[in-house]
Image (tube, rainbow, N blue to C red; front, side):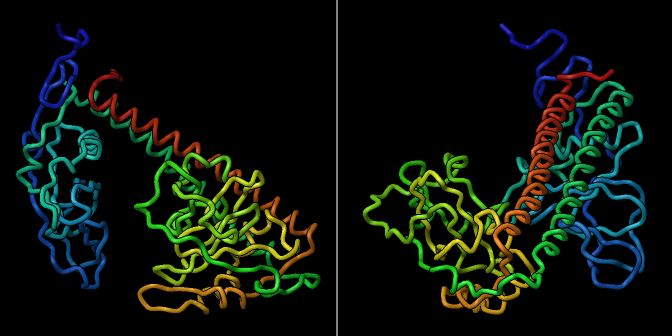
Length: 395
């Protein structure tokens, strides 16, 4: 007995409405071919597009008009973009030129959603051929009007997401400017070397392969580099924190992270990363082990407010000191001895609290917007799945 709903049919691309057709890209396109431009360094006004986007400019153009580009080879194989105007296209990119009786954006959205990585082959050098792309089957609504309605709905969702992304970027820039201004030293602020207010120790070395979902919370230096914020709430984020299955008897108390501890990385692939750090929020004293390539900084007094710690190491002045003391070529490293030499400006405790509250409010606003952005992206994914397969009809 068939489970297919009335008015739908099973096809090689899945279940679609009975009045939809399945056509190959070759059928609805006037051409699918590789670009021909190889010169990407010549000065000029015409953009040269490649598999990674804009790769240069030329003084003459090879193509014009609206077309779909699909990266043909390399790590970006399958990446899909739209171009228009007069331009050049490199020979590692496929150009799709559609016939006029098919909605351009509908096909573009389908290609972006159709997981072209399924037709990519080759491990050393991933590749999509023009023949493969031509043979790709596309489910099409019976009228161009319905195709256009679907494309417009998805374009509206994209526009909403784009506006929110721009707003978040603007809010981040405002926060960055406010933070630099708020943390600018005043006459009544004290200049202190970190070695005068913190003690430093190392973490317990364990590889990523040793981590699992069992044991005690473990802070790998890679998770500091990958963090989107400068603090971690151990209780709230407990389930997401990797664990190390080990007896705490084997762990030095200096490597166990308490509330307000600062954890710096001692190695980075670039100078900018040498100042990466996390502030630990752990008032419940949940066992949390600082790990490989980390430097644990514990306060020797109460000169720094725990919330203020989230921001005071992010100023340009402090970051420049980290860069100054970083050593190495391919990998930049910084030692406990050199971190101790870094100076920060410390305001009175009441002012620390006020500054932290202002910046924290900005962080909270950005976090709400980011949550909304993630929700919109999820909604858009659902829309694409439903609209591009005819599960939801707009006309």
